[in-house]
Length: 503
Image (cartoon, rainbow, N blue to C red; front, top):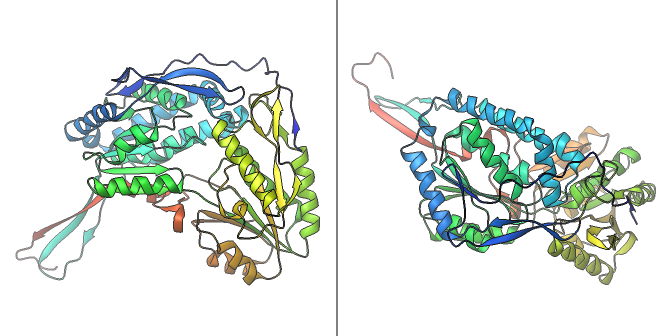
């Protein structure tokens, strides 16, 4: 069922006035060329928060021109790395000074927990900037050993103008996972936030300017995928595009890149991540990991542990615990500190989740708890934490990424069976293993085809830990130094040696 909190706001929360609603191009907030705007909606109520400038192809062209000029003729790629680092550190400090307001914008726009935004999303994004700022003056190539009389070395040069297309589930985190390494590398960029969640991205553009990021280096064009997003992907003067979102849109991004200028593409796409719980697991810990893995951020997370495989010896005990915990989970207004789950991001996502719940029932999975919308005061896009059991691999709820608080449970006997079933998916973003046996952990972690494997933990992200997919979860990595290298070209430079005592 999920318990729910009343919908009275805590009086201590100050809902911010929306300050930035225009496109940010070449260091200025400007209206879209067409003058068109679109509504951004509060998922707690379905009401309009603000009207935002709707950028289209012509606006993207302006932003690309600004970024191209800033790259070809501006100071940013030519500054010493240490100077770029200083300005990135300033940017991070400004984020820390505005945590409350930024967290409130993501809560208003995306239904994310305000307490989580203040404690995790916003401060950790400032730390992402600092992590890559620390790398900005350590970008260098190698001296190479040639087989003939030549001296050779590699240069790591910024790739150029980058397009970042970011999703709505983690508006701040995703903005900085992409922008920070690109800034450190010396690139200039255009960011297109998701149309559902434009507010914080525009605020970050304002802070970047205050931090001393030169005009044209960071541009933000708000708008829709088929117009603004498509213009970025097919632009002849963008050198690389980084996209996080659905596999279906990932294909479109790649196709547009191929059909335009063969720009470099990195894609972080969907997931249907398995969590495998073995008989020797601590039941309380395993149940906690499984629940947080699917209900964190209301299931709107690409690495959600949406398929949980439990070994038969502890299956009944674990399921009982899981259902109890799900029923006690508090759904309600995300500004309320007692609430654990806010509304789904928008009406479309809300309806998609409810449709998948109906598929689950129709295909014969057993609904253990949840399965219904929660009408809090008759408004908002709230869904009960939902658990299905007896889920088979050919059911839609086991195959498709639902992106909501819907867990599919299944029972297994042997390690081999668990590995086979866990791998029977087109996705490969993440996976979890709960066991006390080191040999089992080693075998299973090496057998799973996924980019991140969490053993006795889940959702353990960090700036130094590369993150990305296998299979149809995409390619390229965010986080870690791997992400920095996405925004760098490797150039080999060779010169002859005359009369050298050695090669």
